[in-house]
Image (tube, rainbow, N blue to C red; front, top):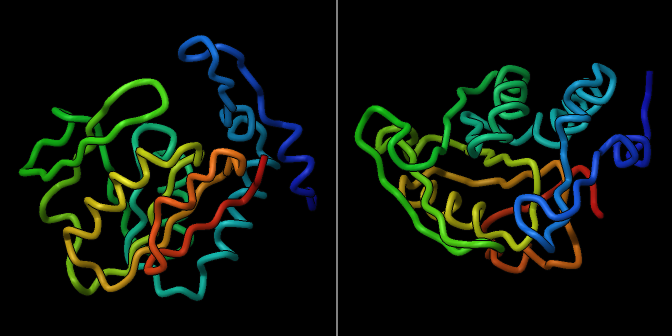
Length: 176
């Protein structure tokens, strides 16, 4: 079954005032529970990166842990988690950032990547970009050859892409 991006967009559940009043949350779990939507997302993202030489897919906690390993498997790459503090067992480096509704910190294992890696950083949604910018800074500190950034959804009006320099390609499957 071939799906359109409009069909994928219609499959996303919108939850007003979550996690705080004034935020419209786009729930991608509705895409994941539908086998056709999940397969279509996997196919689209694989096609976007199949010729980029990706060696590691880095997923951001927690929704980046769903499509990230699927992409890693399809791209014949490893999977690396970026997590909140206290969740990774080995030595880590961390980056703090401001987000739409507070401050947060993310960590990665210090030995997760090296200069031979071509990295695909993945998360579900690009809003203002704070989480992914922090994740991107963490990854860059480990000096990979190249970094690509991918989202399922980009909220274009929030202009999150503007946080990233020309050295990082930022793409999303869907734009709202």
